[in-house]
Amino acid sequence: MKSIAGKALLLAAAMALVFQAALFAKGQTAGNTHAVVFKSTGNPFGEKLMDGFEEGIKEQGGTVIRRAPDLPTAEAQIQIIDQLVAQKVASITISANDFDALQPVLTKAKNAGIRIVTADSSVNPASRSVHINQADTKLIGETLVEAAYDQAGGSGEIAILSATSQASNQNAWIAVMQETLKQPKYSSLNLVKIAYGDDLRDKSVTETEGLLLSYPNLKVIVAPTTVGIAAAGKVISDRGLTGKVKITGLGLPSEMAEYIDNGACPYMFLWNPIDLGYLASYAAVALAGGKISGNEGDQFGGGKLGNYAVIKAPEGGTEVILGPPYKFDKANINEWKAVY
Ligand code: RAM
Picture 1 (cartoon, protein in one colour):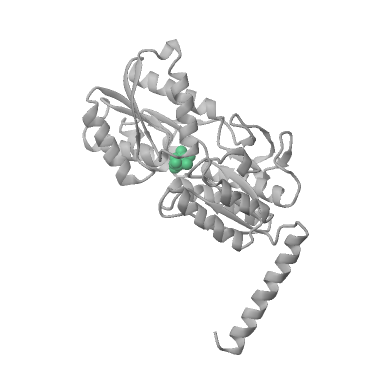
Picture 2 (cartoon, protein in one colour):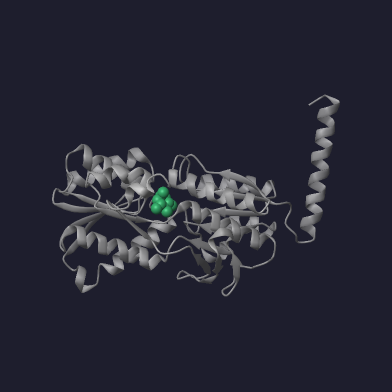
């Protein structure tokens, strides 16, 4: 940059950095820029979550940085967080690809005065101020087991098609499912395999095909991921297995309407990802502005969603729960498919 205008720009940028450094020295956060980081690109659930976050931040007069890596790995998110620390954002809201691996970079962010919120998929309690959970973890796991039991007719082989093997949210739900399956009521259900489609469409299709090949008596595939359940819906429909192998889990109505209509998926569950991101934005601003610290008992306004309380999280640390999981079936899917 040789022009005078270029030099002036550099000088202005340098002065802004000095100003921000002074703010940080006083322990304040710079500016009103809030970042949201999803697990990976190309996931409509993540896009909706970030849309909701952006809506909420703009409503509160802030600006937003939206980021997501190409692949759902912790390493890729670490790079993004490093960049956000350099950009001195006021807060980072992240749907994490790993429970523990982000701790060093998130600690670095925290030490730079950046508030850390997780939404959808958490990190360990030491690495976050608060987790914005879509619904109670135990309730989600138990609901999915009950759905599998119902759709299998009470007995037989079931399989789980998950996201990545490191995904904190899926792993927490699966742990509850495994625990719930130990109850006498479910003793005739046999969980034959947990497959990982990595929240990638093609890998989820391949993994579904693998399940069908390895387990010809499979009755139900439970996919606690919107990418996985849509891929399973496609495979079951394309192969004419509708009714023979049922699918349930967590799906986006817009992606699943076709498979609910054709009977491949009798019913499934989810929550509003736009609201999840929106609620996280209110928590992020409240934290960055020092109105809450993320401790149990804290209360904050969630904009149009009303007031929310910070409670103890089962894994330690604290969380805020958006609401209960919502059931989608033939009766209501057409009403919801245009919403998210
Ligand atoms: C996928 C992602 C996300 C999860 C939903 C249900 O889109 O894995 O983290 O919450 O499914």
